[in-house]
Length: 371
Image (tube, rainbow, N blue to C red; front, top):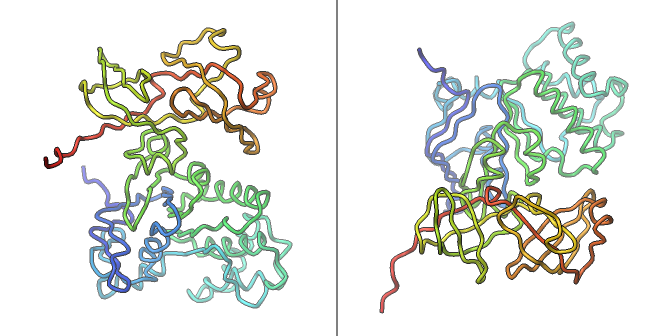
């Protein structure tokens, strides 16, 4: 049985600026009907990769295929460009009505009047803005303008949609409302989408796969739960929300589990390692449980430590609690838990987490330094 080619595939894609290599993608595929999010810090190369894939930047090397055909062949580039749409952080609208803005891509493609009217109306309704049809684009709010930009992109029924941080400049309620509508529309239309963001929560919500980028390279790519819970290294772990990252050394091992010494404390994790091996423990804050007074409540967790609360930081729907267990640890608690436990800085509590909740990164020892 022949396996269909991915919608988009690149190999050894490179971009240079001022003599410096700013993008170096050894391999990337995007399957039809999926949503891929590119996440990473500012300057990681997300926008450069997206603009290269959208043929707004010409690469200095590599191969680029769309539906199995080389994009840079004599006729492949024009055909590919007609199949894509892109929406930027700031809406780029023409100085005309909302209707005319949404219709512009259809007119360029030579579509007839009745079909244009149908497509425009359909997408204005999808994004909840039919009442803005005859309004000037200059008189729109930021959220309304971004809805128009998205409606214009979707009106041409693109084979692939590029979204370059489309929610970044919006206030939280507007962002939430637009994200909810866009998520529903992308799933209903099964539009293949590449979405650049520095917000991991946006990526978690929208994506089938997440690619973590830094310094122009893809460091890890996979399903959201895999990338978030099984980061390959400390940089990825810190970027995807792992608050506690601890280095230690294996001192005991058993069947399927082991104990590592971390700041002279013994912490148990699951995995097959060797005694003396250096490891890094990644513990997500939502996997840490607090109890008061210490050791009073029964727990199935293998790791239970007395801890002093050193800092409590409010984060909207929950609180970040910094702990000193002999090693630093971070937990998230709800406002209800904070009140019920009467948590405050300087307080001694019991902090626990399961051995299975630890993601272990095995570290290979480097060569011995010269004498």
